[in-house]
Image (cartoon, rainbow, N blue to C red):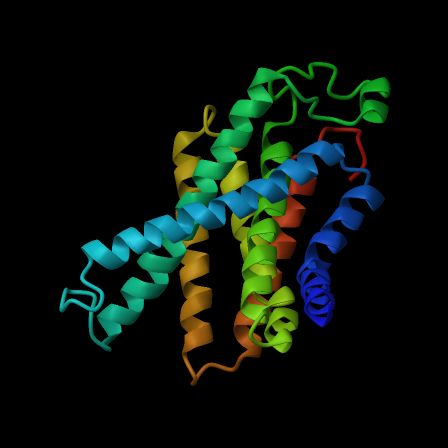
Length: 249
């Protein structure tokens, strides 16, 4: 019974950033139905699975533990680990998961805006992406990033609950910010494929730099935290800037 209480507490701690973003959407009246919020969380969990598979593939092909070029303890190994084996695989997993969400969006099976927003005249074209490609992409990417962090933080917290609490306010903003960049890139891919690629690369670089600073004992821990929150607030501002005109966010 105690194990269930601990598991529940871990999930509550890890879910704090998700709750805060959900409240931000509601208080700012962002037109995102609850169904898409939940789907985005599931996409985040799915992207974690994809990243784990890609990381396992890198471990086998790049020579981890087998004397390959990535084995050892040098700077090259560290850079490969933080930028390729971690950042690139996790952001690629996000691209795949969010790409599937966009395919669902284009089918029109689920409306992209809540019923009250449609009654107000926004998002009348509910089949396809309608008028919300950038804002919609950034929003689902942000939530998917937090869904990724929720599962990851809970798994780390199984060994130490303090880790789950720390990651809820350190790694979660980073994953949310990177997810928003990926989502906005996918949302505007047709109009600007090179900009979409740039957003993907910026997410990989931001993610890798964060990991590099976290692993470097000579860098004050507050610095990567400030960078993660700065990136998150920037992503939220961009979602705000691409919201439908006249619809308050």
